[in-house]
Length: 348
Ligand code: HEC
Image 1 (cartoon, rainbow, N blue to C red):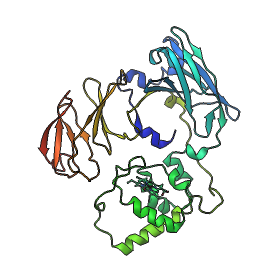
Image 2 (image 1 turned 30 degrees about the vertical axis):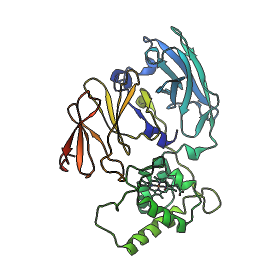
Image 3 (image 1 turned 120 degrees about the vertical axis):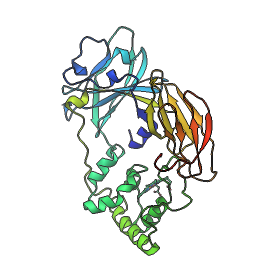
Image 4 (image 1 turned 180 degrees about the horizontal axis):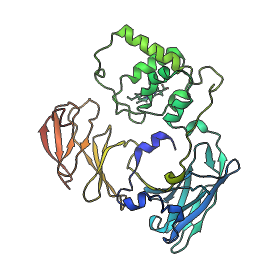
């Protein structure tokens, strides 16, 4: 799974916190009392039994996916309470590996399905790395890496490493990137009408020097040299021990442009989110996966989308990022209720 894809799903499981984390001493894998819908063993030729493989099951047609993590002996199991009967597709996350089968399984009422999974070394490691793994893999000094760390803010660093841009081309690209507001990303580019503030305006020739320095370093990280990537790829260790005692629930949101932000859970267990970069306030019922979304009116056409800050209970507020007004959203209401004067920075 690419890091980007995580942005339009989000891990909640908040409606059932007891299922989310199992305390040490009562690990999920040792539970024999609760019925098990699906269990199996994960292995590869290289490692034999594999610990820390995230195994995800998603029912055909569902927007909810459930994930568990394999134990030190490579075993995984899904509690029956978390997988209703039906046809499921399994996928795995273990950096460096792919699942060899299509991962189709059937869950039947009152029975435990057994699915042993075999993983092969991946041929596409570059598509599996997180931004942290890219930064760890990059050659160069800490200062050089720090200089381009901000490139990980809006998208995968793979966009850089799989490109063939030369240093000269990168100068133009870095300039283009500097014109995006923080909420832009490749599925939804938005231009900022004025330069980003902070630290005062930098003179153009000084700015060009900085872009040139970044561009020269960036061109050492990609395919512009014609010999593929010239540095070894480093990967993070997989989860181990207590970190494998967990059940994750992941919910798909209606569109891939959703970037759930400032997520809160209200006293009814309903999850509220703002889509970073869209005029949308959404609510998700974690028990059913049902999502309801509310369009927030555009206050200033042509400007990048506003940031929304949902607040607990009484105020679900659309903060305008300094664009003239805020909108209040009442508890349980399906519409925008009231426009307020712009909040002071202390309120934001
Ligand atoms: C504020 C958000 C943001 C930041 C920060 C950002 N990018 Fe981007 N990047 C985008 C968007 C949006 C796109 C897709 C539109 C485009 O290509 O202009 C993109 C696309 C790209 C692409 C693919 C398109 C191409 O021309 O090859 C590359 C490479 C890239 N960015 C490099 C960088 C580098 C290098 C940095 C750091 C200096 C950076 N980005 C920082 C938003 C950002």
